[in-house]
Image (cartoon, rainbow, N blue to C red):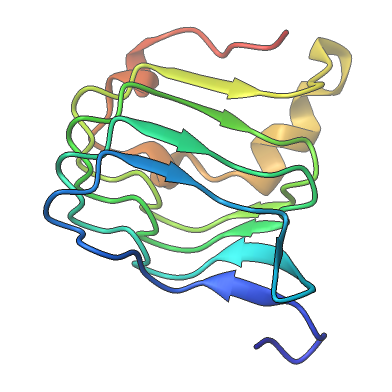
Length: 130
């Protein structure tokens, strides 16, 4: 439980074999506000992640070394992505920021450090916005 009365994902069951992660918007009536540091690090079989609207933070190394993850949608409520959050995900080439506005691209560049995507194909792909 976080100081503000919300909760964060701190890990997943069976990280060696988990291939899908659907993060709920609430856990035991508390809002899920973040993915903790290293929460899903090393989940090499993870191919699908669904993040809820309302999520605010993706911690450092949260999805690092999830080599099977090819794409992810970042909800527009996310205000912070930690350093190396997606580090070493060689197959990650599609990162979609929901409700993103090209006129406000500077807002995204300031909130999300390029270091969050080191070691991914995303660095060489286009910045996708719906």
